[in-house]
Length: 82
Image (cartoon, rainbow, N blue to C red; front, side, top):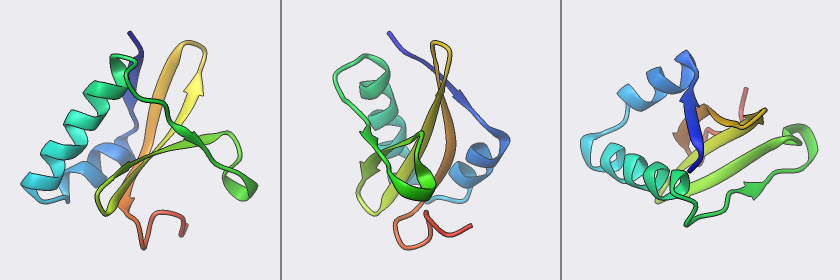
């Protein structure tokens, strides 16, 4: 089982999302935590980050030791903008 931690930014992102999408995101993270999903590695500016797709939302994660850290949860049109 993977350990998943949230940054304060990711928690704020999650609070802004509608209830139905939020539920889908939580379910996706639970499946990921139980190792039935693999995250896709990003390249370029986002090297070292991984993504999970949930409908129109993207969850960006990074690793630190044996933990996965959720850095951002944003709509696909905004996720890669700083």
